[in-house]
Length: 192
Image (cartoon, rainbow, N blue to C red; front, side, top):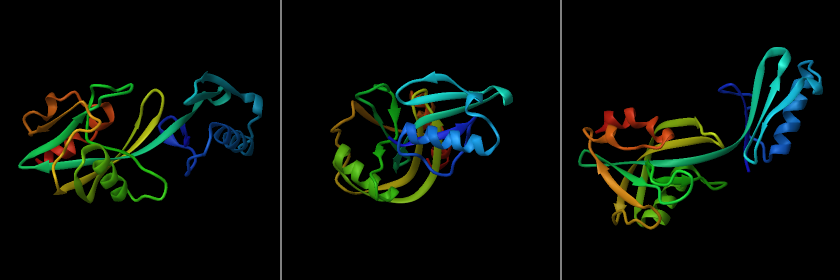
């Protein structure tokens, strides 16, 4: 599990850590180097995917949280953008731009082309990065790279999603988007 450390909305360290324990050790070391004592840092909240530490002297809260990096397709055909409805998990029934998690060693484009083959059974060409969204959900922090995508071969065929729609500019604000996906909707509107 990748773990990212935040102070408010700002990243504390340039890189993610491989475990919660590793993140905690590095935060403690960082604060000791700044002159704080281990006892100054109090655990405020604990869960499998995140922990909050409060530094009372400065009234600062550090959040250690699971980090997930994903890619999302912005697929536009004839003035409509393609969207899928999640069929599982905590965000079941929410609408999103299709895509998925990046695997180690993959570029953003490779990851998105693979995800579209696996989940929607079509061959895609991923071109330009439109926007990268940083969004913190209650149990994880999401980095979502939104990439302009074209269909090369085939057509979207639902293998994992509950439903799919092609949405025009007039209907895009009526969709019940997942919070992170909502962050890119304004950019997509400009493209429709």
